[in-house]
Image (tube, rainbow over all chains, first blue to last red; front, side, top):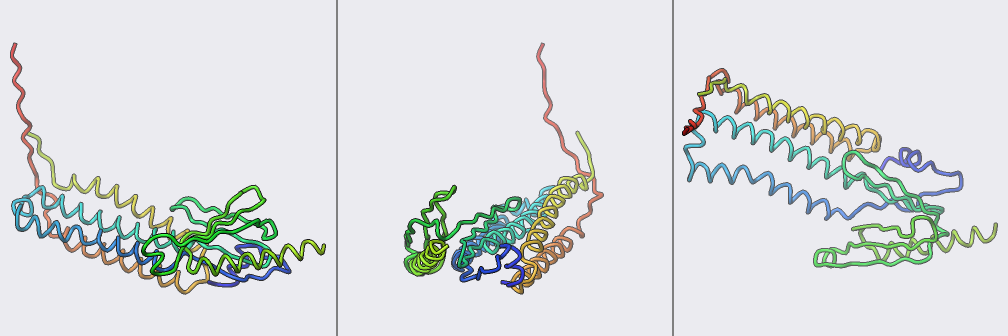
Length: 182
Length: 83
């Protein structure tokens, strides 16, 4: 990730250092790409079905151009939604500094949410790996309980959640010591 | 019996393609705004634009041979009213 862009995005403070930049596990994107690959194959399957069982439709003077127009629209839409799904994955980021935890979430095409949490407000954290694929590939969620306005922060489908939880708690402890000295 | 040119089918097609292009524009805008300095973003955008071009090219290849000026007729079912 471009570091200059990142610093501008979080309005980095003078004493603040970016410790971790976390994104959802790559397998989450791969599973979505596999789903879109199946969507791409649907018209191909339908074409062979029409060719073998309903050849009249492919020869019809109205249905044939209508089917072609429909397929053109279908592939255009699937390709654009695939890109939107990639952006939804790639623009979701959790940035952990020595002072804050930032949740930057792209919610669809028209919404983007940025939440901040001061590390010293973290009360406790829970990490969870649940399900067949998460267990096989080691990704899961980290739930952070806070004393702030937003009571719970969730880092979803992140790699090595147990390790990440420990890192967050260590940073929170250091930040609490820093604030207590003040 | 109603007759109309086949090109009438292109009107809703153009409308839907316009909506899709709007989403293309919004996606590119989001990427440019939030990932300005990123090689992966640039590669993803490049792949997306190439894919869009491929879809457009093959759409043109399959749709251009069709005679869109051909008139098509639809016979409406007759309604008999018994008085």
